[in-house]
Length: 296
Image (tube, rainbow, N blue to C red; front, side, top):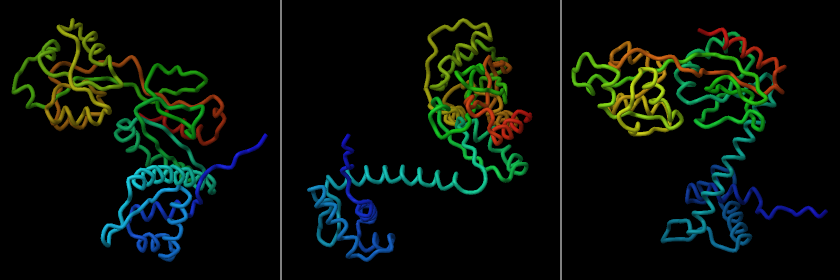
């Protein structure tokens, strides 16, 4: 079978073009790449010849991108970022020592996990822990991640899971929102905007069921992508938010947020450290698992 060669310009030409597109100046691009100005402009001309279109044009003394140049510069920069990230990842993991890649939710990682990590680093100084955050699902079978922190019932296909934190949720708002009203009941929450989280579509319904409330209307209100945005929205007085208690404990303690609609309720789900069954024998994963499952 004939193997077709990729139809690509040289990487040197792409580097010279990408740097020139950022600086809009061949001399500055040359300085960044440790080349001569003539070498950079020569590489750009070769690229234009390869592509069959002009990437730059002169407007007076200024160098500007053509429309084709603007589109190509954006695509080249994005793909070079990906290549650089892949390269650094391989370089990091090939160095002496040990690396663990952990996926976690943004707010859980910043509020619950990161403040505790100094202890892990102290106990295991030879293990480098890299964190990756996202709000959607982590693929532990076909990715570079070794482990992930997931929220659920502890059951995911072909994985090993360890419960690390239970969750309770509480309805909170800023004191200004309720305007000094006292003796509010859980039912009164329906008189205020209900702030929602995209990934927890049923949070308010579960809270109301736990409080034995029959909702007057379909639960609606401003929706946010991440917990930290939801917390900031509650701070800003946009409405009432149902949040994990440990995300807002400091604000509740100092009075920035209040919980006038009743005590916290225990969530049915919890946070788990999860990894593929194929990695159950990994020594570093065992060390991290032992550490994180012993936290309060």
